Image 1 (cartoon, helix red, strand yellow):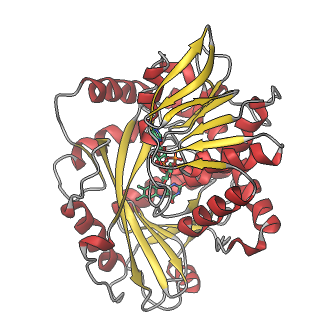
Image 2 (tube, protein in one colour):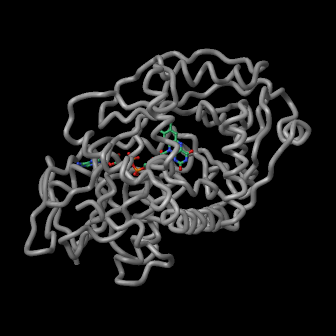
Image 3 (cartoon, protein in one colour):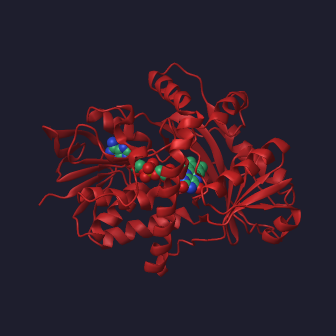
Length: 415
Ligand SMILES: Cc1cc2nc3c(=O)[nH]c(=O)nc-3n(C[C@H](O)[C@H](O)[C@H](O)COP(=O)(O)OP(=O)(O)OC[C@H]3O[C@@H](n4cnc5c(N)ncnc54)[C@H](O)[C@@H]3O)c2cc1C
């Protein structure tokens, strides 16, 4: 029997391998890098069932236009002559309406809740994983009246969909963040959210899968496929040919190129973001989003990670220090007493979020094929949604029904 080949060893590829090997399926994982660093290793590690609104939402267009004029803003599209970017933006604008958002919410919510439950199971099954899953919720802290209004409206919407949301005043905030002042008007706490250390999770999964017999081929770039009719028989790489029973495309921001090799359209842009770690002094305790600046704050005891910015960048991986400064300056704007120190360039982590134009992932069979599955396009929520994606792909792989409805994630919706 030939193995199932997974292309891409980010968190989605690893969780897919995890659930497939649990079912006794032979898995080979191919990645063009040495897997020391990709978008899955240095992100903010937030598990966010509260994020039920996709990136392509009505307010984003007007905000995005305002942000385009600031080099330190949280969202940016570098205007350039690029057909792929133009096509992606057009699809984004088309999706950013209330009807599409309303349709997306139940799909995203159920995928997130499935993932959260799988993380809780994972924590019990692997108490040695040291992933530091902190189940203390996520606080959305705001400084301005306009964002306060948006966040409180959103809290009511989240409750309508059955999610817990608490509106916090200054005294409540002091209870969750006792060691230092937060310069905010208020905050909303989503107690069902959590955060973890993405690097620890990633390292654990990789070692675990290797020990379980998953074969990893590093520094191996996929260049094409050998097909017979609608079936892919082999994956062609710069290191030779890999025969395959089935194939999973989990190539993150590069998945569009893999789709193209197979003859279907999978619009995708890399949404570049940065993070850096600081000594946690005075200690921040609560995972928080500094809402106006869209900066994520993930505390891990004596260290804390700050991450943010979304620059629609294709697959360009250069570091723009102005964007990093935007994140850095947010720290003392919200936590005036925090002892922040601008990171050296080699301490700045960068990653490309795989962004589909409608803000929903692609999960399911690839159009025109009978043995290719896709798990990609998770944008800002790949860590959050990877376990559910892996679980669903393993169910589809075995010709079973997915445990939740997945029509919203149809791979061929733009093909
Ligand atoms: C600053 C920042 C903060 C974030 N915070 C959060 C958060 O708090 N919570 C959350 O849920 N998400 C967060 N994210 C998003 C999350 O990191 C991503 O959604 C997730 O890592 C994507 O995982 P992936 O497996 O799809 O892609 P990747 O991790 O990019 O992996 C894709 C892999 O495919 C390989 N590949 C591609 N093409 C080929 C090819 N042709 N041949 C061989 N290999 C190939 C690549 O080398 C790569 O290793 C954040 C992202 C950033 C940048």
